[in-house]
Image (cartoon, rainbow, N blue to C red; front, side):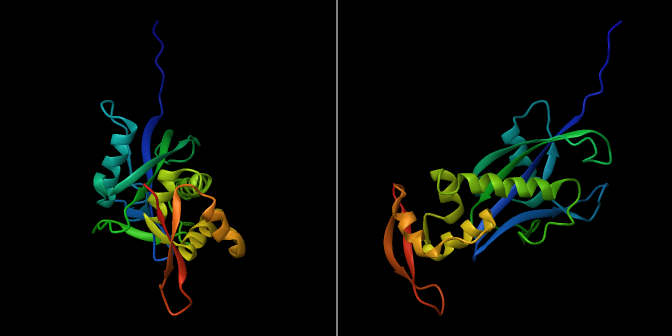
Length: 208
């Protein structure tokens, strides 16, 4: 007698992030189906048998929050979330990714929220966002592609400090941060940049 097994559904959930105007923001979309209809949530889809994880992530971004593939700078795998109670419909396994989005991405479908506004999200989406920030923090200033995708090809010391503090949830030693940046081989100093009423901040750009 052949045994049959009940398999959990595999979903792909994406944390679309961009760093703009000194804030790290996540794109959320309103759910149009139960459960949690009408609530803001991460873009997610069920993985089809015919598609890869990355393709499913791009499909979730475009169909749920209107972000197109060419607006995604890089995808970062976060791992699997398998709490049996994460979805009231039954057992699901979420394979989650972070997607760093271009600063000028525009969509009528998405709502960009900052890091202080994720407590009431459905499922375990707040936990997934927390893991995304943690993983990006590990790669910031260590992985050239991820760092450039977040801070941009040109940035200031002030914006770099702000992003580092958000991801690291702590205070950066501002006195030594410029010296720290000088030690990174993939950036070079460009000169002072005026960004507001205060003193100019040191400018930086990524080398080719």
